[in-house]
Structure formats: C-alpha cells, structure tokens
Image (cartoon, rainbow, N blue to C red):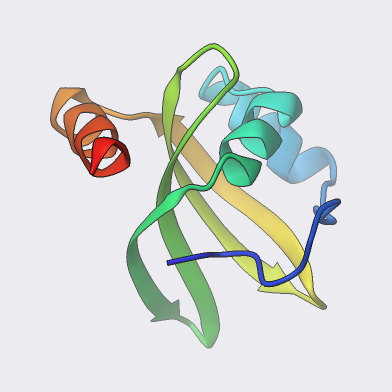
Length: 99
C-alpha cells in the first residue's frame, strides 16, 4: 500500500514537540523522513480521538528499521512517534520487501 499519492518532495509537519519526542527514541528528523520516503509498509491504521493514526515500518539509509506513527494534517505528514523495530518486525519488513 502506497502512503504517498504524489511525487516527492513530501512535506512534513515538524515542530519542537515532535522533534524532541523522536529524539527521546534516538530518531532524527532525517531518519524519520528517510524511513517515510523509502516505501514504508503500513501495518495498522486507527482513528484515535478523531484523528487518523498510521502505523508503518520503514528503513533509513543505513538500514535501520523503524516503527513509525504519524498522521496527515493539511496534506502534510505529521510525525507522532517512532522507535526501533523489534526483531520480529524487522524480519517482517525484510520478508515483505523481498517478495
């Protein structure tokens, strides 16, 4: 499932709050954006408190697999949080990408 319907560059909605939150998980802005633009795999979608939340697995330029949580606001990608994918999710990511 493709997350982005348009060609790059995609716009991201960054502010101090989401940058600081991701930094707490040792994820940089660049890593989040890389993982989002390298054809991530959607693993879940939910409506939480009236806002859509997307859950995806993506990979950075250095092959770090991240679990990403984000939403769309005014056609921009709004990062919510993210963390390093565990072993099973990493295996799932690479298995799906090799199909």
